[in-house]
Length: 77
Image (tube, rainbow, N blue to C red; front, side):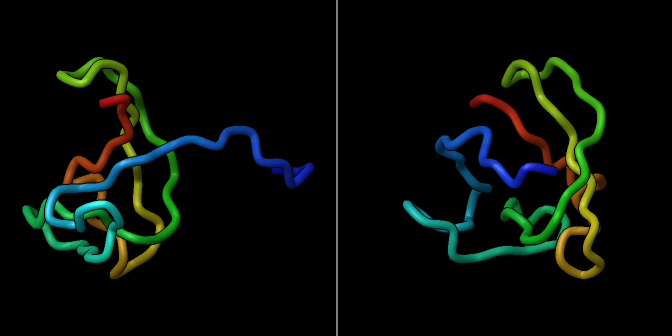
């Protein structure tokens, strides 16, 4: 980040009920299964049903601060 360079450019997916090809709907509500907007801090890692996964901690009140309790994670699936 100090050099302002993009290190990785790849595809990503989003939560269920967020949209088809493009994410259009977002939520911070538990059990909505939708992605949340905003900035995240990376949390701990674990091996889950989708392999190596990383927990995300939402940093923006009202936008993604429920990410931990909603089990929002990054994984390779």
